[in-house]
Image (cartoon, rainbow over all chains, first blue to last red; front, side, top):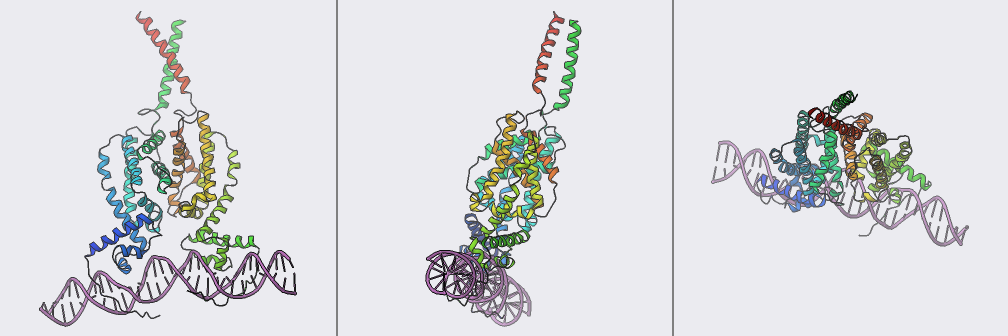
Amino acid sequence: MPRIQGKSKPASQRRPREERIASIMAAAEEEFRGNGFEKVSMARIAARAQVVEGTIYRFFDNKHDLLTKVIEAWYERMLADYARELEGFSGTRARLHFMIWRHLQTVWDSPQMCRLMFDQIRSSPGYRDTSVFSLNRMYTRRTLDIVAEGVARGELREGLDMGLVRDLIYGCVEHRTWAYLRGEGEFDPKQSADAIVSLVLCGAAAEVPGGDLGSLTDRLASATDQIERLSREKAG
Amino acid sequence: MPRIQGKSKPASQRRPREERIASIMAAAEEEFRGNGFEKVSMARIAARAQVVEGTIYRFFDNKHDLLTKVIEAWYERMLADYARELEGFSGTRARLHFMIWRHLQTVWDSPQMCRLMFDQIRSSPGYRDTSVFSLNRMYTRRTLDIVAEGVARGELREGLDMGLVRDLIYGCVEHRTWAYLRGEGEFDPKQSADAIVSLVLCGAAAEVPGGDLGSLTDRLASATDQIERLSREKAG
DNA sequence: GCATTTAATGAATGATACTCATTAAATTGG
DNA sequence: CCAATTTAATGAGTATCATTCATTAAATGC
């Protein structure tokens, strides 16, 4: 069908590209933050950014792409300092604790953004191509580096399935923050981090820190045997 | 505006209520299973059920309600036998293993249904009013009963935060099945269940599983006494 | 067998993501 | 500095759906 178009108004003014993108993303972030993904219409975002709907599509492929870019920007801003902050901690437990606490604290600070990320970004088909994905990989890689280092130092058990340890930690974190993310509960980042580290470590840590309880038990048993024999000999 | 309606065809035939609901739900399940929530239109479901769109709304409030009822039915069918199957296992470890394995196996058997449940049902506002929610509560309650029993028997550490143990187990399970659910990886339910139980238990279990650290301590104390006596006698 | 209730119909409605012909502002190049 | 060309912005469409409702006939009650 032929498309008969009416008159179109002039392109009133032309703001610089970067400024325009920034204002669209700012408007989108505010809207998405406050109302979630589905409830927000492109018309609202356009109105808030003082732009017409069509203009958004010049810079973003579609609504989901817009959200993805918004979340990416937020995530990059946030993760920027993590690596440096981590430097301040030494020891497997302290470093693991920091990673877990930092994660929990982020959820606590920005539940709406995290929810968008969990519900909309992370389970979308193109997720693996987003920068959020690679940032997340970096982040969990860092966690597993700490675990590997712990193993090397003898603080953690050998032969740990790294993938499973990652699933254990971040799965636990996610479930712990579940209710809070949905406005149905609270949690304390510090307290939760303590508890999670303890629970995970007692699984991951070698039974007796720095040692092998198995062989120790063997030595102790044999030593005791000898002492008892000596004692009996003395008495006998 | 007044609504001027054209002619409407007769209500050709009237199938029994239950049969009609069943055919709608069956059609919806097939469609949702194969195409996810958003991609499926009510028109397609109606066509497959040999019903007109409006008819669906006589039995279901809206598209999401239809999905919820479909998932509820599936979930009820599935969980029906769990309690009985669990009876076959005794011992904390074996029973926990069964619960985790059963969960993993379900995901493995019906990834599409699980995905719908995770993405669409579990994070919807009305989730707490669904029967899926109460069934899930029952299910995790059962898991925590096993943990509590383990504590009572002295097999698991005292003072465990039950909520955290639940988050640890089910969070880990969910993350482990993440890729598989999205068609991006595999996992072995049995193997994963073994690994998860081990990792979780070594955290939750008393330091030496089943072993008698107590009697070892007793022997050590008495041996020390003897050493000291020997030492004194030798010196004296 | 007539009157009333209830189920089924399918055509409207409204919301909304996304497109595109039109127009004017920038930019280029002579 | 001005004409030709490129590019951005516009807003009126279009397409797709979930959802509604006046209409009609089948059941049911009397």
